[in-house]
Image: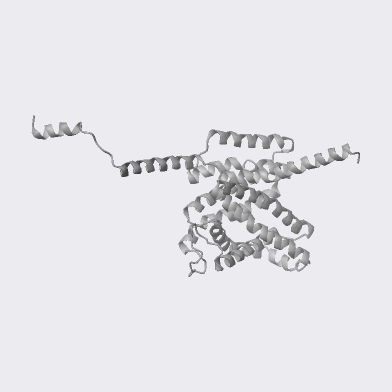
Length: 336
């Protein structure tokens, strides 16, 4: 046997010591792999995520009430102009808060950093959020058309299928996968929606097509928020800012060519204190609503945001129903 072979043979049976540094690297690698798998399957909701979901549902209900007051009680002629006012106010709030260094537009950004760029974000980052603005405009356009095309019960029933579209778009755009219990929960939501609205469903090809298109654009919009929110380095305020300064000029041009701005200038209650108070509260609520949408979608998921959208009226409606039933039973018992 050659000396080299002998040395090789003896080395193969010698004990091999592993340094503590190698052990630490291996444990860190395993931890990261497990963390990636958990994120890929979908993680549990944090306390901050729960607050974001509850805030969204609260702001959404209140905003509908104030928008309804402006459009119905005061007969304001254009919902697009209200959306434009809300967007202008949101951008103004964000500009002031950032200029006063109260908020930051980036994750972990410094509040004391001076902003040389007038847009507060680099042009490259702004262009990175362009798909978000485009999907938002598409979502607005199709959703408004879907409301006009069908009756309210059919619209409500079909819109609850948005959760399915959202799951599909999250898988396509972000590779997000969900567990079987989540699939079962979504199936129950859709089944319950169709059972609840079965008596009111009447087949209308155009109406069904437009509502399902609205579901599709909603799913794309929310999935885009989730994806860009994680890849752009912007926080919820930064996403709102980029979305506003891109969509604002487009919406202004749209309302101008449709004649909505002209109708607004001729609106008899334009400078009424009551209408201005309703419009101001609507703009403030829209700011908090958009923030909670971006926060809820980035902290939790697009699917969570969609389900919160389905829940907001159901929960409040059921609570009011139970409260009314309780009051009726109480007054009946005391003989009133």
